[in-house]
Amino acid sequence: MDDECQKLLAEKDAVIRELQEKINELERKLRSYEIRDVYKGIIPDEVLEEFMKLTPEQMVIEIGKYLREKAGIMETAVKERNEKISKMKGELLEVTETVKEAESGAEKTIEAISGVATAKVGVDLNFTQKYDYEDSDVAFLGEDLMKIIGAKEGDYVTVRKNGSVNLKVISYSKDGFIVVPTWVREKISAKVNDMVEVSKR
Image (cartoon, rainbow, N blue to C red; front, side, top):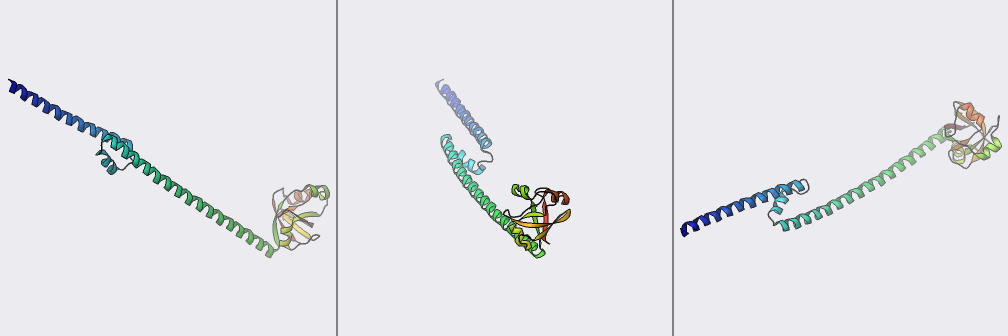
């Protein structure tokens, strides 16, 4: 009877051990699926496989180390990328400025050759008080534009937009601008900040 009991107890212990092993295996698989799901796309499968072989405590430590290293690499890569983008923006800005300068230089050269300059219509309080009246034939013209068209103070210039008017020029300190009487603006349909052509008469 004792032998029979011993035998049954041994069989029961073996079944319990077997079931316990199966439970442990299922827990490992479940943990593996959960970890894969959590770290999918973050940690490669082959690296996760290696981590799964460790104890849970060690696995947590190794995953933490791996993620810190990866974050450091990512941070460096992002910093390098941002530096490259910043450098490229700077180079692009330099090229843009060079192109603008070249265009402006070419425009001034063409104006000097053709004797025609483009000026922006401006306003000036001093001009308004002294010269803005009907039949006034005076214009303020930027010194840079006077050089381009070869005009000196007192020379007559022709101002064109929709029609043309001849005016006596006085040098003006603001580059690129011309100030004309109101009647002239109305006659050639030019508003303040419009562009007009100016040439020496």
